[in-house]
Amino acid sequence: MVTAIVVPILIVYFYWVTKKEAKKQKERWKNLTKVPSEARLEGKILFIHTEKRRFYHQLYALETTCRIQNHNGIVTVVYKQPYTPSSASPDLSNGDMLQAVGSWEGEVFLAGEMISWNNKRQP
Image (cartoon, rainbow, N blue to C red; front, top):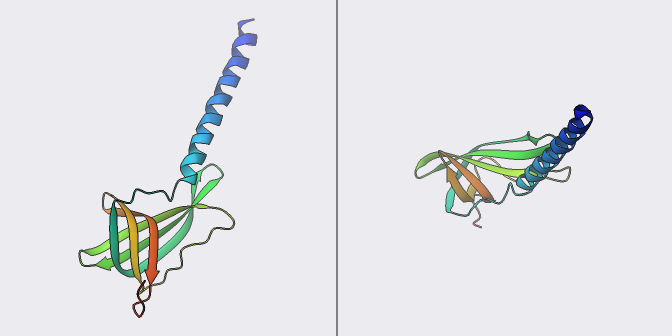
């Protein structure tokens, strides 16, 4: 008798918790590019790597990692964006100048906005 009451209540409770968690993760996924604009970083691009990473269950993030040379040395810049079939990686190439706006997280610079230009032209 108790089982007939408790089991459905547990199922409904865990369903509710799962839906709430999925909604929270989807909101975090949508806001991947919203990084606080606390600092600006400029330098020459030495290395670029873009890959699709799993964010949460069926949600993926497109993560672009750049190593740039500036007056302080070599810095790693990470730019994350939600991956959709229509999303594209930023138009960057080695040797271009990069200006990134974002915030520091330890030794890594998290970019919310990136602007690149060739050495021959200015932004």
